[in-house]
Every structure is written in structure tokens, then in C-alpha cells.
Image (cartoon, rainbow, N blue to C red; front, side):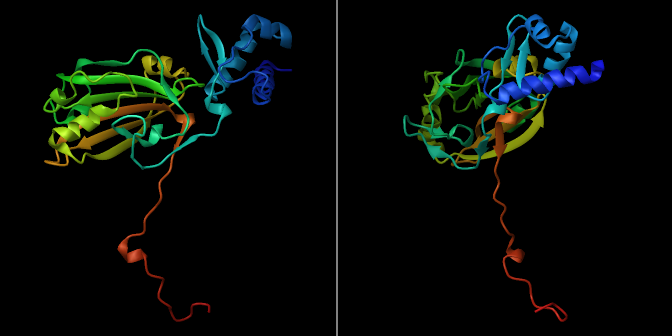
Length: 267
């Protein structure tokens, strides 16, 4: 079999084994040398097969860590709507990307500390100059039984930062928005901006995805209910194969009535 067909054949056979459940999400695949022996191929050919599977989102290969089966291909995508709910476990809110019924947990360390806001786009949405030192909350979360689902980075406007000083960085401590509203900004209204982009090396490592897999970036801007000015901006980064957005289209006023009958229309 030609080399260019051989690696694709090996990739297809490994994919079939993954889809059959031989290796569960999060499980490590055998080493390249072991797979090469099993398939009677050289290491480079098997490496090309793994690279193809990584590009297609089936595995995640990191030097020194091995090859892991990804979660995104083994479960339905999570629909993401537009409903914001009050958090039943704590004061605050649950936003669409975290509104599943199962328990979500933190992956790694949660951070809440001042940092320079060096992204001009986010700085503009927050109403501050780039490089302004702003209170930043960072957390990586997802369902307890899975790899990290999303990175969330919240920037708190300096004018309201005092209201959330001392709030725990833990993801479950969602009362920082509650405290901002209690400080005179009820009700906060939110707008989201969605775009696809490639992940940074740090983002790919945190989400356990290949750098070749695009991510969905969702930036949420929160505006004060009192003066309409920004009080927070949150950036979510999610592997693109683990989420789908759902939008119900609305008819404009001129499209709600049935079409008028025209001469010649079939009855």
C-alpha cells in the first residue's frame, strides 16, 4: 500500500476503535512505537496518522504527555441559547454556556487579582484605556467527568471593583455580579459578541486541544442598569467542536402578515 494511503488507513482504523469505545474519552492511546508494531508500519507513518486524527479532533497529542482521546468527538455538542438564569446554588447568575444540569467543577487554580488589560478590543468594551490595571477573574471550568470545557476571564470596571473586593475566585462564588447590582447597578444587561479564531498556545494547553483546532470566542459586555455604562466584560474561550450556538430567528414587523393574494397565484 502506498505511504500516503497507509497512514490514512491506520488513522481510519484507530478512529473506528475510538468510536467503538475501546478507548474512552480522556484515555491514553498506546505509544507510537507500540502502534507501529501493532500495525506493521514505521513510526513516522503512525505519527502522520495521529496528526491526521488530531486535526480532525479525535485525539490530543502533547510531547511528554502522550496521546489522549478527546471529549469533543464522543458526546453531543452543547447547545448554547440566550437565557440567563439566577444561580440556584449561590447568589448570582448562570449564563448559557454553563446552564447544563450536571455539576461543573474548576480545573486548575482560579485567580482574582488586578492585571493590566492589554487587549484594546476588550478595553474599549470595558470603557478603559489599554494597559489600565483592572480586577481580573480567571477560571477554567467544565463538567466533573470531562476535560476542561471553557476558559472564562472577567474584567471588572474600576468604578465598581470596590463592590467585589474580597469575593472568592472560585467559579461557584457567582455573587460578584450580585454585589455589583446591589451597589446601584441593577439590572445589569448583557450583550455577547461571537467569533471563531485560533487558540493561543496557553489556551490550547488549558483546554487540552490541538493548536490547529479553532475555538469559539464569546465576549460578554455587562452594562449598568442605572447609567448604561460598562461594569464588566467577560471573555469565554471554548473548543469549537464542543459547542453549538442556537438562535431563534424573529420576523420583522413587515414579515408577520401572510403574503397578499396576487393575480395568477395558484389557488
